[in-house]
Length: 147
Image (tube, rainbow, N blue to C red; front, side, top):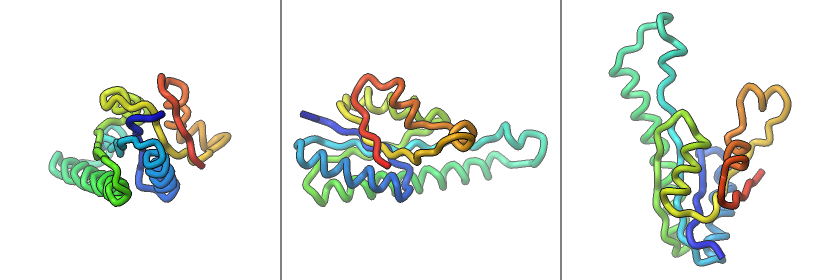
């Protein structure tokens, strides 16, 4: 059925549900897992000219985000390993979350993507966007969306 499953997570309670389901599915299918978190770059252009932010401050902030992201994917892999599954932890750095998820799935030869959707509608969806919708629209492999 599935050989390698990518679980996209941001560390939220909803994405933890995706981790649990992904692990259960991988265990049933005898598949390997890839746990992925995408870390955005510091939004310098938003503050350009308004406040002075040193390169060191930006680097520290991005390093903190990357460290937290690593903890999230390591935790997912620890849970997978506890179930006897092989898991690879991946942290991608990009502002293009959906594109990074699809790229990681291709690079790691995944045949399923598991992710959560917050189910935003109306103006919230327009303002906040939907990475899940972008993945669904552009993925060449099946996507399991949990809510």
